[in-house]
Image (cartoon, rainbow over the protein chains, first blue to last red):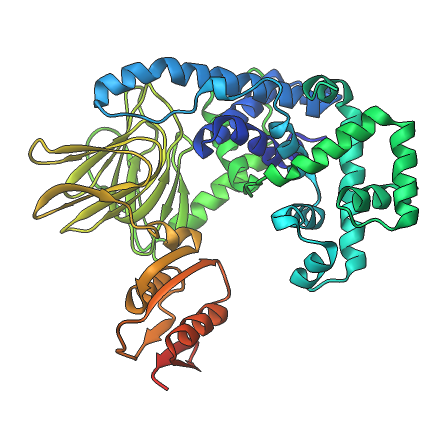
Amino acid sequence: MEFEDLFHTYYSPLYNYAYVILKNERDAEDVVQEVFVDVWDKGSFKQLEQPDRYLLRAVKFKSINLLQRLRSKEANFSDIYQEELVLPDPSEFKEDDILPLLHFFAAKLPQKTQEIFLLSRKNGLTYKEIAEERGISIKTVETQMSRALKILRKLVAEHYLLLALLSKI
Amino acid sequence: MDDIHEALVHFFSGEADDLQIKKAIKFKKKNPEEYALLSKLWDRRKEISIVDRDSHLAWERLLSRIETNKSIKNPVIPIFRYWRQLAAAVVLIASTIGWYNFIGNAGKWDSIEVASKERVILPDGSTVYLNEGASISFPEGFNDKQREVKLRGEAFFNVVKDESRPFTISTSSTKVKVLGTSFNVNATNSFTEVSVKEGIVEVKQTTGNERVILTEGLAAISNEYGLNKKSADANFDSWKTGLFFFEETELQDAVKSLNTFYDDKIVLKSTTSGCNLTAKFNVDELTVIVEILTHACGLEVKEMGGKFIIEEK
């Protein structure tokens, strides 16, 4: 995969992953950018057999690292500005939280599938209601939902060990 | 084999028929761990909220970062990628009304003035969205100590974090200083307004010692009355985003805000007052928006010469 393709494929999923941890647009974007700069610097992107795993690990590491640094800086900042600042608390991020990963998965879904997949979570809409809201057939909704699950299942297979560990089955 | 996904999806949402229930239960018995994991993930999707990001914009930022990063060990950036950026820069300059030097000393400064909304990428990879008629000037390369730009008009800044080099924006009356954040600056000769979307921003008056620190959702206005803090207008960056939030907003004010994004296409001829709106628009079709406005206020709309004229029935 070319570097630019790699970037476009993974940028949004990784951004969403980082955002769940950092809860800040700017920081999430910076972290993802930094990871790609590193990948570029190493000139190793062609050897990345499983880019998912490598990139996820790098983004996670940098995000948590940044949270800790921000946290330790907080005191200094308050000194300078004598104002209270609101920074995310690294302890809020639990190691066993699968929510960031779920965001990564969802952001990787094809556009249409993602829309319907996410729409269905709202207020527990039935497939019929989703179909009506979007002006499409129930069959289409069902197809897209099945497709979402199929992709999710594939991702689960790829990350099985990790996920099993995280959700402590 | 796709049946199984459909069966599971229906089963998870409680919409399965008898056959699908049978299939799902069979799957569960055969693969208990996978089933548990899938149903857990499926359930937790309620907590997902995806932020849509433009990877092309991010890609351009990455390119300018890679280019300025001196520690590149593998400097094989294909030439055409440079060219694409260069071409963009040339088009930008060509589309400006004119470019000139703000100040003559301290190295070469580029100035860009735009007739329509434009995005400019600064030497450090920060992005600036200039509103119509705004102008910005900045050095060809920032030095090691600070990143300084000058602004006239309105712009939204997305500043790359670099704690060792503060980013400052000088306007006619203020100096805005940040480390890395996003915010809006609207600077005319008589006033400067700074509204913060994210991060911390310091605003100082050029003359005098007045200074305020702003965080998310706050704004500062500097004018003849001095420098004052307030909460940011809900729609301060709508001219760029096309997102509008109105809460009990007077029709006149709503139209004024909407026109910043929709190029003054709405003309309000009715002088009816007392019609307050609560609505949310997200880069919607203007026809739809106008219809909602007029309907809510019991008015009428006519389309003429690409404009929407709102008047009394």
